[in-house]
Image (cartoon, rainbow, N blue to C red; front, side, top):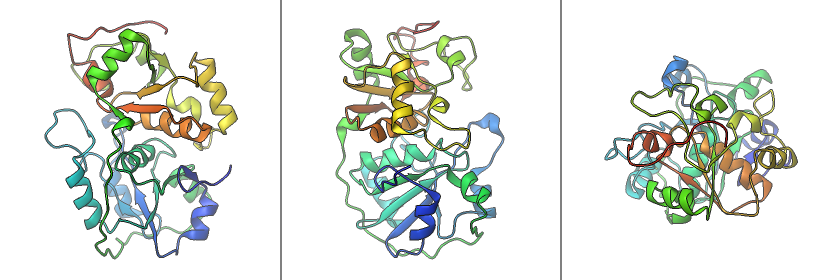
Length: 284
C-alpha cells in the first residue's frame, strides 16, 4: 500500500515516525456490547507507545439520545486540548479490531477541519502480530490548542437522508452486514425495526478489508462498490448501525479518490427508531 498521512498509513510508517515530536497516536477502539470487550481496560493493559485513549462514547454529544453522535465543536476542542492533540500535529488513529472504529475518529477530525489524520492499516492486531513495542503507561500530556473549522458537507441528518432516499439525488450506502440490511437478522440495539433505508445499497464494511484486517487496495475497493451497484461518479451518503462502520466506507471512498461523500451520523440507530420514515427489506 502507499502511505498517505491524510488517510491511511502502514505499521512500517508508524514505526518509522513514532518518535516524531508532532505525532499524536490515538487508540479509538470501540465494540458492540455483544463483543464483551472493554476497550479502555485493553488500552490500560497494552497500547502502542505514546498512544492516548479516545473514548468514542464519551467524546460525543451528551444532549442526544442517540449513541456517540458527533460532539459539539467546543467539546471536541476542549477534549483534544486536554489530550494534548492540537494544531500542527499529525494524528494516527488505530483500533483493536484491525479497522472498524478508528475511521470514525478519522471522520470526526475531518469533520472538525483537521486533515492531517490517518488510520493505522491493520490496527493494533497487525502491530502486535509483527512483534512491535507496546506499553501500559499513559503518556505525558501537554495542552495544545486545536483550531476547528467545521465541515458541514461531511455530515447528514435524518431529513437530508430522507430527501436523498425519495429523490435519489445522492446514493445511500449501508455498511451493515447483509442479513441486517435485508431485515433477516435482529438489530443489536433493542427497539429498532429491521431492514434498510429505501433505495440504499449494501456494502458490508468487512468486504472492504483483507483477511488481516487491512484495507483493500483502491482498485479492489472500487470493484467492491461497483459490484454493489454504486455509481462512484455520483454523490454518496454512508450509513450503518450507529455511524461507526459507515466511516470505513468513507475512508475507502477517500482512498479511491472519491470526495463527494458524507456520513449519516444517526444511521440505523435513528432511522430504525422513527416510525414515520419508511423501511425496506430484502436485497437492494
